[in-house]
Image (cartoon, rainbow, N blue to C red; front, side, top):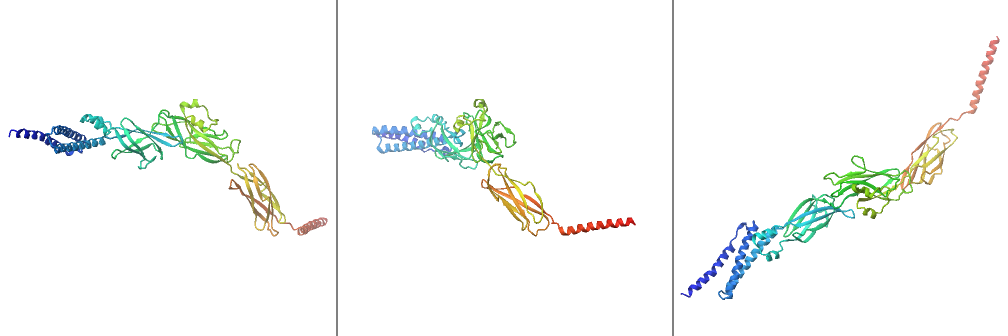
Length: 498
């Protein structure tokens, strides 16, 4: 009996920790899933109890005071508590993961494309706070990498939730706390506000609508042309619509200038809304885009520097106001694109193709003629090319009255230079049985110029056909009249003598 008491006491002492652990380990609060940090503290306490018990059981086993099965049971309980603790720890870590956008800067690439530089940060700075709160040992805590967010997927969306970036989606394998990561995107749609879509960790998702900032280190107003190449007829004018976007954090006033455009071509910038001329313009507060237009006037005739069908490449520049004196007057400057890029200003390449068009002028000195029915008339026509391009195959067509005979010499003029003149003779003869009266003849001229049909102004010639006189009848009538007059005179003389 005396030997049995120590054995029962020892068994009771060994049983108490097991019961205590079982109770503490089995206790579960339904709010642990809702308040993960409190659940982690509870799991940590259960883990500490199980660890202490397991270490005690190992000591008793080494002293051969407990059996192998009792030691194995303590190990299993410790392993379960450790797994529960790690699961609670992971739940807190995933809940604490937080990825944010620290910078979103829009800039223009060297090829003129709009790009975005996006900086992302791991903002889970609370990890150190709950580490101190629950007194987690560094080794286990760091083994789970609480300061790293894995597999961060990033894409840029517009207001319709369509991806507008290239690449469509970028990935950051590891985003460490305190070490921001930078991604570069090319915008497929030119916008100033984008939605940054973030998917990371165990499937957490965030969407941030951000306004794209301008790079304060760049002092540029980028220029884009809606129509960079145009064909314009000599003597005409055209507008190049321009869109200007501010990429500057310090300067908002710029001067517009043109280089490589021949001096014979007049030009000026204007505001398309008010039609006022522009030499300098300013971006107002909160407005990063402006519209402008470059109007050019071509000379009436080709010159040494302006040739028909010879493209003229030139550049429109936006120069910051504080660099106007440094860069100087560029009106008559001839520069390569490399030299313009070295100026580090906004520019756009434009192209102007001078086109000429022929214009037929028909001169007829006399448009009214009087002839006898048996006569014909010769009419001289002067054909002049008053346009800015040569004429080819000038054709003179005559629309005479019925049964009239016409002939044109020459009928076709193969080629006429600018300001060239050619005389054409038109012969018109009425039919033998023509009736007296007025007749109209229409003259039409057509030609080709740069594969386009050119028509001259129609001319109308009026021809008066007079009645031919009867000579015999007229002679008899005259004789009768003369005889009548003589008879009257003789009769009067005889009457007076009586």
